[in-house]
Image (cartoon, rainbow, N blue to C red; front, side, top):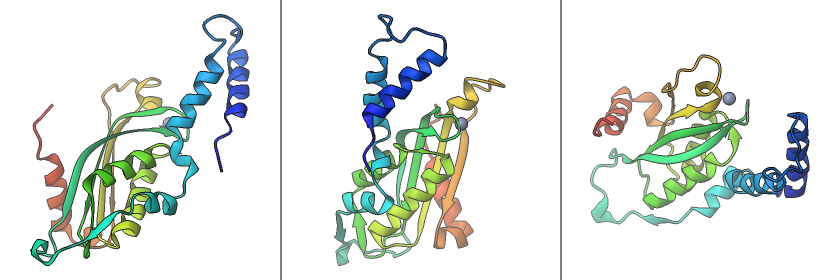
Length: 200
Ligand SMILES: [Zn+2]
């Protein structure tokens, strides 16, 4: 399934007309084309299933004996910056920071790959909770570890730009799988690891 650029152009033109504007005026005449191109980029993740994203970034390496210290040692990548769009309003989610942890089960994934998985999952229409569960599912496939945690905080422009303007309100969601859902101490270790950063 590929994104239909021509159909997006046509519909954006329709929206401009519905807004009471003239889609042929100078400032707007190329807008449908620009929006369609932008949509192809910001919704790139909609072209792929979780399984396909896992295949794209499944470069793992076997853990050498010398690197195995404590099997309960989590690997944490924090504050990955991504963008997404909410499926209820097609509104931008911004200032989104994703932190992902897993307990290696013999397979180690490159840290930059985790960031690229989060980035690709962000490029879909969804709710913030879904970003967390999709990242967890892909991480599970790639690392073959069931012990995954995902923390996400982000601003939703559908909340911050309209209605009650709580400009700095952030939505926080967590996804815990495997040991992370059973072991409260491990959860705390994860959350403390994320929050252990200089105040901004
Ligand atoms: Zn929304």
